Image (tube, rainbow, N blue to C red; front, side):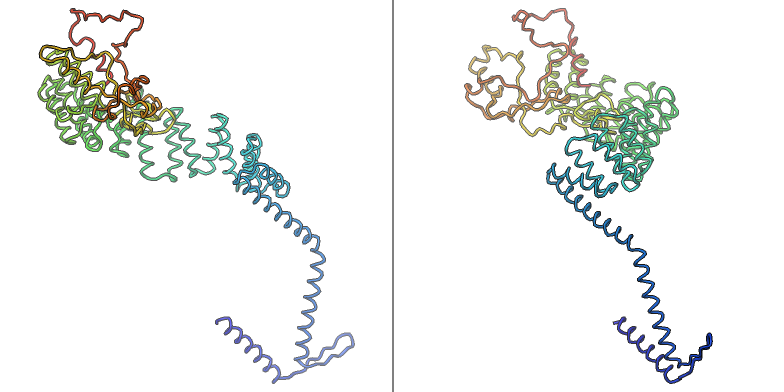
Length: 547
């Protein structure tokens, strides 16, 4: 609508101008080189307009003649580019469809028709990778690095190819170059960070983390920085304790619930005599995440304190996380050191119906220390061997006795406090194999043979080996023994079905260090236990398995 109005206004103005000139005629006289030209104003105006149009037409023809070679060249270049684009399109589609022959042919055509084109280089690299030609792929990626618009893509390709041939040095150089060119590039920053962590260069890792901070979530950045600061503090723990304390205090501010940082800060502050600040840091971390390392650091805040004072301190700490098994274990250990066995038993009482390995091992220690009852000790250690596992520092299926900043696969902050077997994720019933050395109860006058047979039949789980699942893959975490109760076993089957082949446990039972297992070459007759052996001589070594 606006355009129509503007057009009508323009036509009206032109008509008004023409009418104004027509109502005011005039004469123009031109004398030049003996000639006299007289004409009206309107005729002179029309002649000027016609001359202008003739000049414009002549200039256009002349310019077309001059530029004709360039136009012809542009036409052929455009047609060549269109053919190259079509070849690139065919090649990329062929790569997606898995047609190697068409992809290589299209890559050759694109390289001939559109040399240096980013998509043509990408097609050449992709087709070479598809054909297994790593040298050709590297040449294409290296050619990409010479162009600003494809430099990062070429560096990414070179990094992947270096990883494929296990050339860590080349991969590191490429990642560092990419990180310098684009600090916010996630893969480059992560590659440099992983390389620094693998070399235990924690200062370099912190610098790499700072360069990629904009590409990370705020919480993720704070957590990674806390982990790196704690790792550097552990490395400086012996050489420069002041710098280690500074790092670990900053890590505690970044991640107050990070157990390794809180435990190390508590120990260093306690050594420096700042018990109040150490207690505050440990209590805050314990309330967020109860863990044995914090309990140990809290118990040893003042080494000069008596065992009874440490017990009171641990009871206060346990009150900050009531009902948690770590609270009960911490109180029980402190009570055992103070020889207050009643408090230790009361702390573990809620967990005795289904004890974990640490609970059963601690009960064995209590029995040995309080009464020296070898039978009760053996009973609790036997239960410990079959009890469910306790949390541990676990990463990639590997269990560590202490926290480490990098997992075996090179992942930063890979170690987590959890039950090792939970990583396996096997949703299948576990087979409880009774120990071969446990004989059935002997018939007595008070217990006839028929009753003994019923007890053995009821307590021995019978497994359907035809329906039993295959053995789970073995990992280091599987070394922890785990069993299930007899009620969770499969339904009883005829004895003929159970004798087809020997049953294999899903989680193999592990002999204790002082029990090498049956010696097939030795005398099969049982040897009587020496009467001179002191009670509780062998079980402390077994107990070490559950520390």
